[in-house]
Amino acid sequence: MPMAHPSPAKFPPAVRWIVWFALLNAIGIYLVLLQFLVSAESIAPLEPLVKNVLMGAGFAGAVISMAIRQIAKNQTRSVNGALVPPAWIDQAFIVALALAETPAIFGLILGLQGSPFKDYLPLFVISFAAFSLSAPAFFYPRREEN
Image (cartoon, rainbow, N blue to C red; front, side):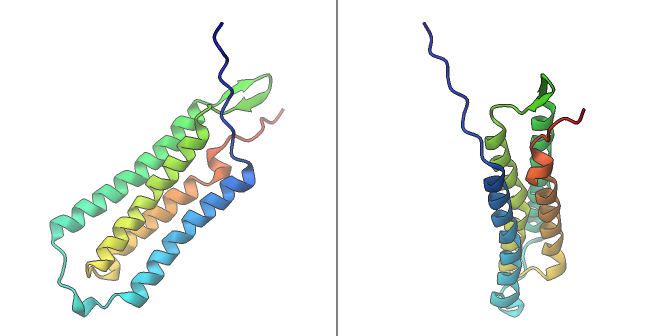
């Protein structure tokens, strides 16, 4: 007789928000580091191709992050009036947050390589938008209203 696999433990709502907020703060920390640690005169300018690749990869990471959120929402089912998320929603949440952070990491790389603020700021904005759309309130299902 096959053994039933127990459903994986779900993150409590407080843990979801703590993880989300901690990773969101990393974006601000990256910006602060760039403002205080980098001297633009001391570093040679970055190749335009490298800048464009990092911009494209950062944008792609944010789009994939938001796609994961949408897939998780589409897999949520209503059972007896209660919304039941897929068993893998916590893992999807962590992956979506990691992908939402990639634009900021690429912006950090651009900044550390001597790119001007106007070049890496869009990556931080994209990352912030992806984080905002992946907040637990938008990622996890709410109770269905009668």
